Structures are given as C-alpha cells and as structure tokens.
Image 1 (cartoon, rainbow, N blue to C red):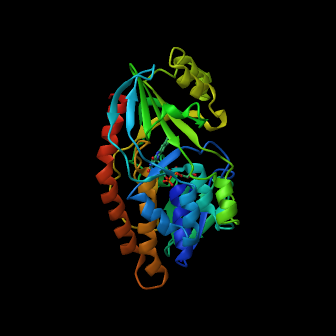
Image 2 (cartoon, rainbow, N blue to C red):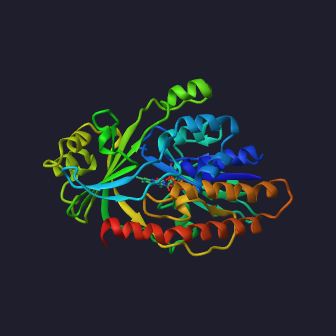
Image 3 (cartoon, rainbow, N blue to C red):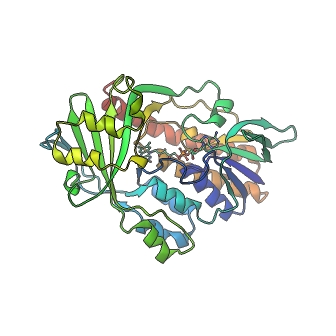
Length: 374
Ligand SMILES: Cc1cc2nc3c(=O)[nH]c(=O)nc-3n(C[C@H](O)[C@H](O)[C@H](O)COP(=O)(O)OP(=O)(O)OC[C@H]3O[C@@H](n4cnc5c(N)ncnc54)[C@H](O)[C@@H]3O)c2cc1C
C-alpha cells in the first residue's frame, strides 16, 4: 500500500511519522521550498487531545526532546487596559504544554528524509479506473498511490476538488501576528499564560513561549541526528484589526509598523514589545473559517487536519490534526497488512474526524464571535 500525503504541516508530517513506523509506504508533497521557507513560528498549546496523539506519532526516543523544547501553559490569564491597569482575570489554565510550530515541524520531520518532497505544489487528482489515485503537481509531474490524503490546511486544494461546495469564509477581521524575543524587561507583560490588552475595538493578545531549553542545544544533547532551529523564548502577540482597518494601506503587509503606529500612546513596555518584534516572523493575515464539512463517500482520497475541519485560528486545530493522524494510522495499518478492506477503514476515519471536530467547532466559533464582536 502506498499513501500520498499533500502538505508537510503538522498533520501531514505526524501522519507520515506514524505510517512509516507502521510499515506503510508514504510520501509527503509540500509546496514550500523547505521548512524554513516562510513565517511559520507561532506558539501552539497542546492538551489532553493533542499531546498523547503527538507522542504516539513520534518515536519514543524523541519524547525527551519533545518535552525539553516545550513550555508550561500555567498561571492566570488577565485583561488590562493600554496603561497595563488590570481589568479582569481569566481562569487558571494548568493543563497542557506550549510548543513553537516551527520547532515542532522540524522535530516531526526527523527521520523523514527522502519521504518529504519540497517545492511540489499539488494541483489536482484523478481516481484511477482499477483503484488508486494519481496526483498532479504544478511542475508537470505526477505520482500514483492507493490513497491520497489532503493535509494541505485551511483552503485545501484537495478539499476543493473533493467537496466543491465547501466555502472558506472571511470574517473581514485581520490579525497581525508578531513575535518578540522574551527579555527580562518584557517578561512582566505576561505574568500568567496570557494577557489581553483592550482598547475600544482593538484587542491585543500576548502569550509567552518559554522554551524549557533552547531547542538546538536540547537536540544536540538528546538526539544529535535531529537539527532544531536556533531560536529562544519569545512573546507571541496578535493584534486583531476590525473590518476595514487594514485595507487602506498596502504597507500593512509587514504589519509591525502599522501596529507600532496604532499603539503610539500605549504603555512604554507594550510599545517596546512591538518595536523589538522579529520582523521576519511577523505578518498580517485574514481570520477565516468554514462551516463543518458535509460527509463524503470513502474513496481513494481523504482529508486530515485543517483541510477536514477548517476552524478559526487560536483553537484546537493542531490538537485535532494529531488526533486525525493517529485515527488514520490506526485504520490503515491493518489494511496495509491485508487484514482489513480500505473503504470501511476510511469511512470509520472520516466519521471519527467529523464527530470530534463537531464537538469543538461551535466553541471555536463562539470564541471567534466574541473576539471579533460579530
Ligand atoms: C496564530 C495561530 C495560533 C494557533 N494556536 C493554536 C493552538 O494553540 N492550539 C491548536 O491546537 N491549534 C492552534 N492553531 C491552529 C493550528 O496551527 C492548525 O490547526 C494546524 O497547524 C493544522 O495543521 P494541518 O497539518 O492541518 O495544516 P498546516 O499546518 O496548515 O499545514 C498545511 C501544509 O500544507 C501545505 N500546502 C498547502 N497547499 C498545498 C498544495 N496545494 N500543495 C502542497 N502543499 C500544500 C502548506 O504549505 C502547509 O505546509 C493556531 C493557528 C494560528 C494561525
């Protein structure tokens, strides 16, 4: 059995790790030129749903490294005004661990050399008459396999062909995502797990990514064959811009100068955080979402992660992507051993994904409505 995965994001790489260890042949095709190709580094909170699943995907020898590059998601959340006067508190968040997405992708790529093909943008697929599927890439090449898995995220090209009725919707709200090195001077901005700065219709969310150990150092000691990025603890901040606020000017693409201008009268520490942002890891993006996907007939193409349940950011998307990877691996392993037929296995995976996603979709949408005030 040969599996083609489109997308080397969190879900696609986790699936490849677990399928290879189950003895299933797998190749991943990613449009980016490499893991370093563009801004990838924001923090991800993994809890009861995602963390056990991620550990099942990774070989046990990498578990100590995984822990070493995590941070604790602990303490209270608070809301403050632009002079840092406290407005309120949010409940203690004492479960789960924090990860940097860029570091996590490198860790998930460990041992996959030769199985991940960069610079391959998927265009379309074609089911083959005798079973199986052919994938077409924009460089004119094709590959064939028994199953194609769309792990190509929100706005998935695989999903567009499989389920043309699915619409990705734009809230009109955009977010400038930035990161700033965590210095002793800036640390008081986030005493707990997050701080929300409120100013009329502007919301600035600040969170800490406190690596237990610098990732490249931890890798050198705990798994020398794994190369992790040279990065250090940071503050991740997201400024949500109300509809229309960013459309006037083109220079907003970078985001940082635009935000610096908006926070001119704010507390000096907040201004310093924006000023000292790492511009290569900051940028502006639309906040998008979709309604839950309809059910689809099992066939030689399935989905996983954000492509299967596109939700607004900041929710549980990565947690679900790791759960999906484990679900699909558990269904495909017996198929690859010739002990079970493919189509019922895929039907079970698809149903499980839909059930799990349905349980968190409405909560994600309620959060979105609250923060965008729509
Ligand atoms: C700011 C922010 C904060 C977040 N915080 C959290 C959090 O705390 N907890 C949580 O659980 N989730 C969080 N998420 C959501 C989480 O990042 C996503 O749900 C998760 O990354 C989805 O994984 P995925 O593998 O499905 O897709 P992705 O990780 O998006 O990967 C998709 C991959 O497919 C590639 N691709 C796309 N199109 C093609 C194509 N045509 N051909 C080839 N390759 C293609 C892309 O380049 C990408 O590498 C957050 C998201 C954002 C933006």
